[in-house]
Length: 391
Image 1 (tube, rainbow, N blue to C red):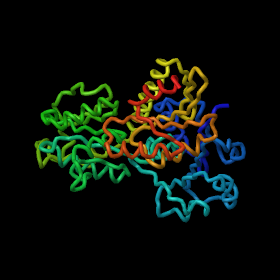
Image 2 (image 1 turned 135 degrees about the vertical axis):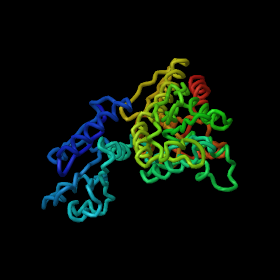
Image 3 (image 1 turned 180 degrees about the horizontal axis):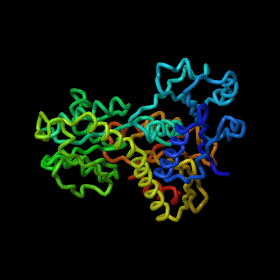
């Protein structure tokens, strides 16, 4: 039986609920997850849920709740599942949300998110399909677009992204370039402000090269009358016009500013790109694992929970969990809790080490002898496979 991702839609099941279902189906396609693994249920189907599989509830709270709704929610909450109250106005939570959901941080629908991209991401995060950290990197040339970068930083910060901007994100005394590469390795999406002189800087050129080498998805924001360069096979283009600037005569330099609406549109596109970006980096790790397994005659199969089962010719088994970005303690815990019951003594977290700080890599190596889940850099997989086959 396939392990399904279960979403329980509760409350006012009107057009908002249908919009969420549509967006979740699109996100599953972007994440390359089979559509049959996404299961929607209503209030009546709560008792039929698979308690061993991921569950998240979404309660659309637009009117006063039914008197007995808390009794129906109790099985979900008692099992530790998250139920997200969704409201049109946070000031109305105590009037429209069931009593049992009032302690839960509510989600306020936004007028500028008609496709429900943000709410779908929250659902996916609670199903452990997207990282809870929402990391984004802004690459720009200071002399041409610094004010635009800061404006965009502020907008994305409001949307709960953890935004890396060199002038705001590196503490005094830190090794500047080392920290920059580390954050680039741990980002979901790069927003590249493609002003006419972007590649005239050594540093911006290196940032682009690093992004390309790790299959990082790029939202390429192109200045008016500036041709779109084929910087990356992983780019999505957003063409600016003169009308997107506060002063159509000032499109470069310290006084160059985008309109609030233009910045909001860019932020929405970055949000939309995020699931595809994570899917591409996950796919790279999976493909590398398949390639290395084939080279030594091992068999490897992809599982619905987005992990891999490896078996060597002599019957040794391992569970491999491709992990995008820099591994942290939460990821170790999730893997141990979700996969400890599998038929193996080896739980291996595989990650792409390129750009990660040496001190962090040293820390991960130090953890390995003391953890049930062990980390393995993708560059070390070939040697690890060879040692297992030769053992």
